[in-house]
Image (cartoon, rainbow, N blue to C red; front, side):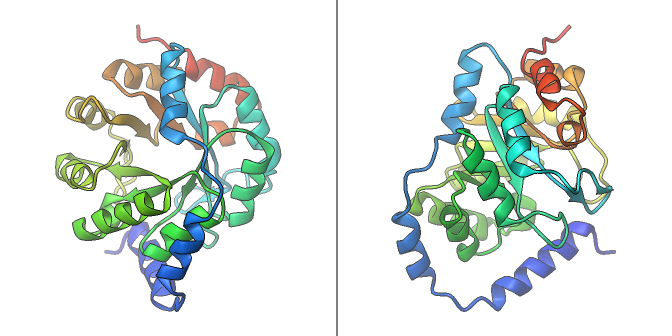
Length: 264
């Protein structure tokens, strides 16, 4: 039975297969872009201040829950997140399944000084170049969506054109591939991409096996300060939070409680 991830990846691979643009030309243009805003450094700076770094997400909808905040203004939301002390932004750019766009990313980034992660389903070297060309400072590579060789190759393209990479994993074998690719930012998705269930215990376990020189990010399923505190105590430098913030009436206030959470 096909999962929503299968359907999304099938669609993205169809689009990639029909893309006739020359990768070498795209990479050359990407290398000529202005310098990115340091993403991992922004997370570690928050940690140095005694906070849990929060990557705050701009997300209009999801395939599993439908509309979350479909009419959001990305510029205003980015400013609210910055006011609340977010270390970085994550912006969904997938249009068909998440209602996002490149315009959302560019509007959000223009309105603040924070580094921005392009959150999308990267399956091709052209996708990597596009992230850099649209102004993203970091991009997402999902281990479950790529073969080991694809992940390694796409990470190498990103390194070549000067954009950081957050590699999303679920378990130890995926971590091994991420490290083989040279990942310096690793995100553990607490949500199973097949069942949608959130597994906090797996996230805690994985925090203990990720090398100490890698920036650790917990993704999905962070419902509030209790969850954030448990992940902080497990050793995560940052949490990526979407639904909890994008549906909040006062995102800045919620952000404050996450940044300064403490385990009991």
